[in-house]
Amino acid sequence: MAHVIFWEKPGCAGNARQKALLLRSGHTLDVRNLLGEPWTEAGLRSFFGPRPVSGWFNKSSPRVKSGEVHPEALDEKSALSLMQADPLLIRRPLMESGGHREAGFEPERIAAWIGLAETPVTVTDTCVHETARLSGDVIAPCKP
Image 1: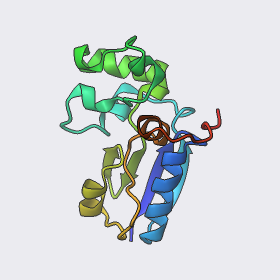
Image 2: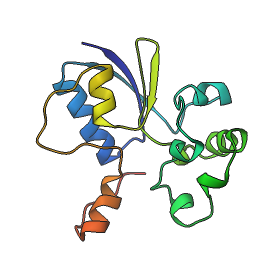
Image 3: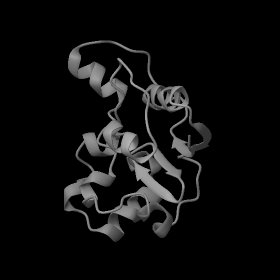
């Protein structure tokens, strides 16, 4: 199995489910704080591969949801600069294993990359609070 460096937002319920799935799949984790990392443009850029700039962003970020930040209108340099200043804008988790980097938790991509155990629970990179809000459920807020 793989050793995965996993950058998360501490206290995020979605990241907790993602880590649990990776551990159930036999992987080991080096968990790091996405918000406290001193990101460089090149370092951040290496997680996004060929995705369009709009796919680099956390769609549940308050600044994106409010309309203050429009990911689809940004070029690479502007996007990376914004993310360095406000890591909550970064699509998470960021993961690295075996020299390969990924942004976001897309189970199919991760299964093809390092393997994932079958799970009856859907684990994605969508914020659990946004999913709950849309379905009318109530969940405790993330820790700051």
